[in-house]
Image 1 (cartoon, rainbow, N blue to C red):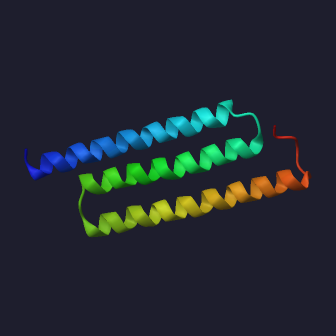
Image 2 (cartoon, rainbow, N blue to C red; image 1 turned 90 degrees about the vertical axis):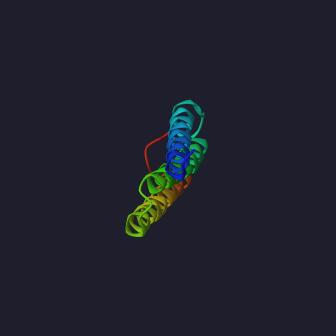
Length: 101
């Protein structure tokens, strides 16, 4: 097996695992009973899923500039997801919004 084949196979595995985590997060969002459990499942699974997808994309195109752009994109999405989840949970704890259960 050549190095290129191994890289492409590893990339395909990472992207597939990332998609599996996205699916698990979506199922958690739909099936878990309360707001805080749904937020936890969604943010954790989506961050890990996106990280694996980004890693797979970096392996498909092993260029430093491309890798830096994808990592920065992943960091921005993680920060915005954590901030959004924090704001939703804070509002739910205060009880000044509509009932989200």
